[in-house]
Length: 88
Image (cartoon, rainbow, N blue to C red; front, side):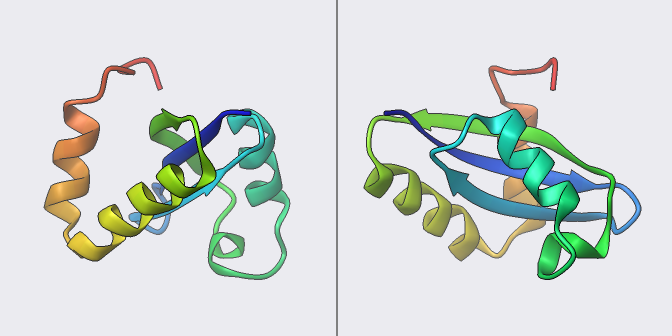
């Protein structure tokens, strides 16, 4: 099984959301967009702007925690800018 650490962005909120999943990323995004409670329920324009793939849940969780601990929008923007996935 593959795990994904991902970053979503909402233009209407001008905010990022960082998470991880074992779901296919497109399925996880649909779940976020359908949410009626929680952080991502605040907007319906979330889009995937960055992701990394991992072999284990622990690795994905660790990466998520590391990114969140940076508490830096600049760090997240640099991460996205240097992404190998510019088509997102």
